[in-house]
Image (cartoon, rainbow, N blue to C red; front, side, top):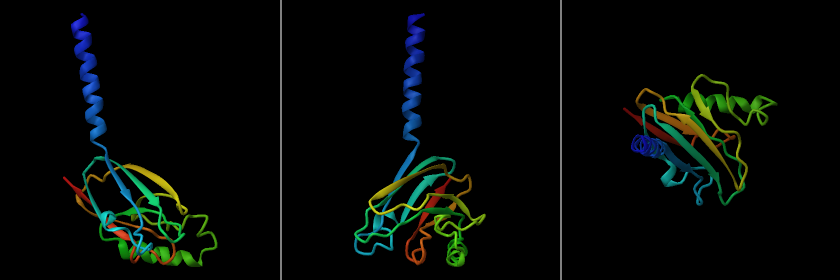
Length: 152
């Protein structure tokens, strides 16, 4: 009986450890030389379809700018960027964290102020593809974007 309980307990501990390893942790941050772009290490990352993902957006740039993070459907950079530009005429844009209402947007953070960070946890899409991510604070999206590669 004790042997069975010990075996079950060890199995649970091992399973919990394996589950924790399945989470892909990524940190994105602005480039120090160009705070309107992601640093080189933040331009792309790869996850498995259906994998748990934890993305930390660290806003520690040398220029005090707020940033957000939107993860969007493949091929949607221009469409979401145009929707972000259209927010400039919306008096509620700041209250909306400059996040456009679009079916292309899958996941997003709020605006992250300088010296702050935000964590975005989600399950990667089931479909393989190059999912774009970007900051939609005014004027940022054209340079501050990258790719989350989802592989089967």
